[in-house]
Length: 413
Ligand code: SAJ
Image (cartoon, rainbow, N blue to C red; front, side):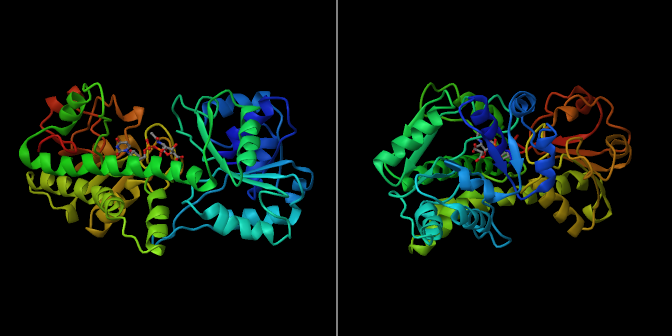
């Protein structure tokens, strides 16, 4: 019942063809849903919860009477960037308790090719029931882009099961409640591969512009101008933009699932590993720029008060998972700076107000391009340096008027 499962449950309920049970181990989340409080930041889901009926429970026993079971649990990595399939395994173990003939089990969580058949299937077949015969196992990778116009109702999907018939049956199930293209692929592995390819594609492309940003800062070239100009090529170019880092529970995480699987097979995914290294370096690169800016005013990081604007990993939302801001804060503290963080979307995690930061900090890092930061007029009296980690304040007139040292990422200096 997270940002993937809850909107999906609403979409199924909205079709009025199914009795929908939303299961979650988080009782608070279940209580919210049963009190028609939306458990996720999702515009459509906020609407849905008032209009559709979902039975929410922590009891897996409802699976006894379920024909379709869809798993939408996290697939994180641990502190050593190793895949952590615990949520998938635990969900599979619960499902196995109630597995019965004719059931369709679908995994939506992002995994590397092989997880469905090498991890989930053995757990399910311990019941003596056979996948592809007594029950179906399919993979329909989730595609959600939080706080954008893209949502479960308008994004096409790929789906693969253990057999051709199983794939068709699974696809027809999704077609029964979604009015989007449901593309049947040849196998579960192909379906698992599509999603991990989509996200590693993005990570590599972001790493590419982040590498260019560091080079062009040395060459006096503004990479944002260049990328925008190159984007007028009507084919074979897809713009990405540099920043202070790559956050979220997907892009900086999913590549490690494929990297790990490849290692198990004795293959070195050097491009994906290098892309991760480049993107993981961007918080440090951002701090290097802050250090250079402060030095122009004779201020050392160890004596500096630094304002960190933005804690979430993406604009206008409050999700801090794998956020570069957390890396930036950690490294600044290690360097002896006093750090004051403010994020209007991460209630409870700010340790300062925007006003206090603007009036007391020597330097500011914009780590998230929240709309609340776009029209700051009065930057206070003390701020000497602003490093714009999302290249979002270039047109803020106030900054230009004051003798504030302003630098972005990859803007040529
Ligand atoms: N970022 C850049 N430069 C860019 C684009 C993004 O530095 O040009 C950074 C963002 O600031 C953010 C991170 O990368 O920190 C991830 O950004 P994102 O826009 O990919 O946002 P997510 O992770 O919420 O959504 C992604 C989806 N994004 C797109 O496909 C555009 C998609 O990969 C998945 O549907 C989703 O993760 C998921 O759930 O897997």
